[in-house]
Every structure is written in structure tokens, then in C-alpha cells.
Image 1 (tube, rainbow, N blue to C red):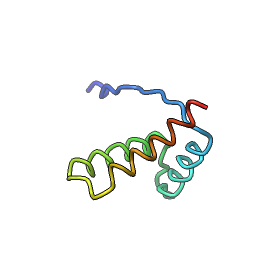
Image 2 (cartoon, helix red, strand yellow):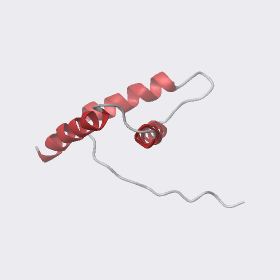
Image 3 (cartoon, rainbow, N blue to C red):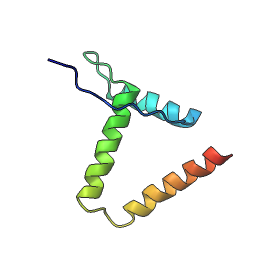
Image 4 (tube, helix red, strand yellow):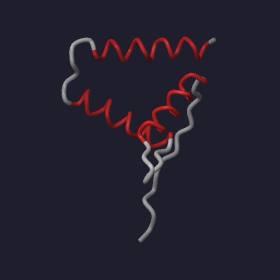
Length: 77
């Protein structure tokens, strides 16, 4: 059976974001299974999409936009 084809995405993240990814992967890991940073990113994508698809809670979109806005300002600096 052929492997499932996946798309690859390269993004630039800050040291703080990398540390958050590392910490989250570590916290989600267990002795039986290590979780990768890529898996954490995929989980976050699915979680955000699901939350928005279910109808965002009051202020949720504004919160996401604020987070993305502050991350965008860091990228420009």
C-alpha cells in the first residue's frame, strides 16, 4: 500500500514559539509514545479549525487575531 501523500509547510517561528512547541510536545508525550513538534502543530490546526467550525465563542476570533497580529509584528522586526 503506498504511503499517504502529505504536504510540507515551512514556517519561521520565534525562539519563544519553539520553546512552547517543545514544552507542549513534552507534556503530551508519555513513556510509551513521544509526541513530535510537528504533531503538536497538526493538533493545533485541527483544534482551531474544529472550534471555528462549531461556531466561535464570543471574543474567540478577536483573541486569535490579536495573537496573530502580535506574532506578525515580531516577524517584521
